Length: 74
Image (cartoon, rainbow, N blue to C red; front, top):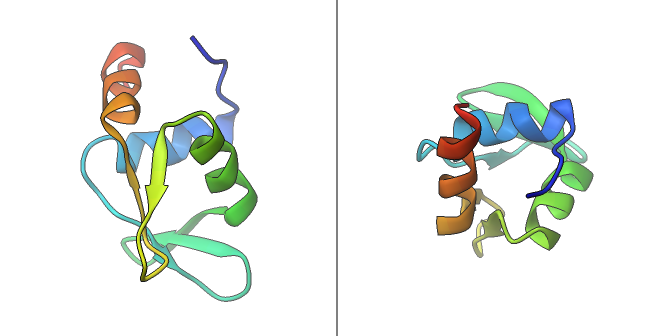
């Protein structure tokens, strides 16, 4: 299992439960109108296989990401 940073855990709390992100200004990544991280955090989750990005620039959890979220109790 991967050790997630605090920022990655914060993101997984949202997207691991079905929320999708929205692109913000610059490299900001937004959920529900609030900045939760930057693109670098999402790219790390992507490399771990926990997040995927759609054509609109919105990120969501993969099935593995949802499973990790449940495992960690986030």
